[in-house]
Figure 1 (cartoon, one colour):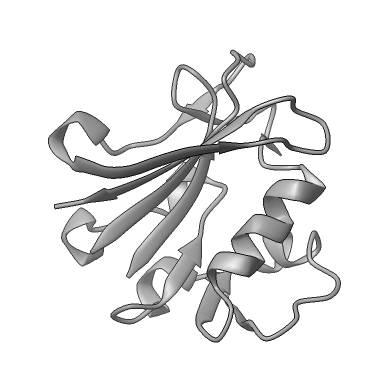
Figure 2 (cartoon, rainbow, N blue to C red):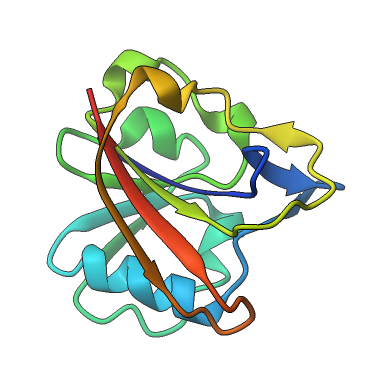
Length: 135
């Protein structure tokens, strides 16, 4: 599975029980990357997506466990992330700022190899950094 996450500078994913991943340009970028692929997510996350284009979105509360090999899984709640050995790659979007996060990514990215980094302008963020990690 290819895990998709959004984090702040302290790897925070949520604050006050709310998502940190709300940005129209970011959501569009995720859909571009996943075109022609399967993208798993929870019903909570699915509410953000309207026009999904050619992306096959599958919604399930156990999305992390159900996502198969080479399928994308967009996780906003770190409590949903289970066995790390299931993850082939991590697609990480960074906000380049600090939010009052109270739930952080439970994976140590320093133990992964970063193979790609790029930046793009978000709708509500002047710069979003996109990173891809592999084992």
